[in-house]
Length: 248
Image (cartoon, rainbow, N blue to C red; front, side, top):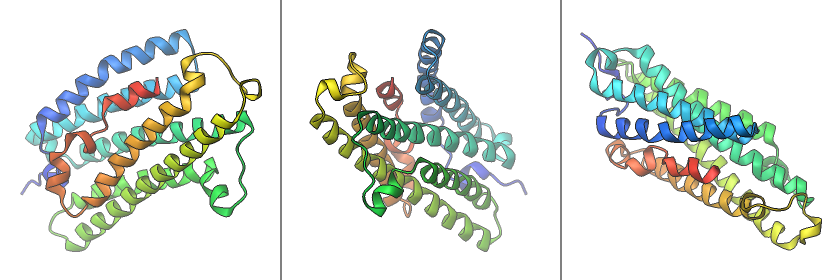
């Protein structure tokens, strides 16, 4: 008997997937145009992020609407992988920008063990990679029916993956708050950059992004025991295109 893997992991809403797939297309084109004009790391990551979101939500729409695709475990794994990699890129890029701005201004100080850990981009990258791998593995394990131990393992992996993303989002929020406070104490001549809204108010924009990420991950974390509630909340369970705009 064929197994509907999409329903096993809560992929059922067609309109939401289609809506966000189309919503990210203009964002992808906008950032692609900006990359051509100004080839920077941030714009490249944003373009890649939007492209991955279009692919991920397109796959999600196919899983939710086409029975044959819903019964294809490989397609489910592909969707989970693309989705998690896209979020990894967004979160890590925002984190790297915050740390770099602190270093440019000369206000970044790692006096405590906690500060050293939360300010170490290599550790943050490894943690996010672990979260992506665990998230993909969780989707695979939860898609296997008739095996309670596999189902339980899948749920456990999903919990760990979600908590890691939540903790890193909290770290980002704290680092951004500290960076914003320190930047306000630095005089204009001492800053390592000047001019432009993004340069002068970039940390404030990053704080808004960090807050959105924390809200999303907090929602996912505290509703792990209620999958139906998660799936009914489009704003939090599917990354809003507004976060991409805020990063521009």
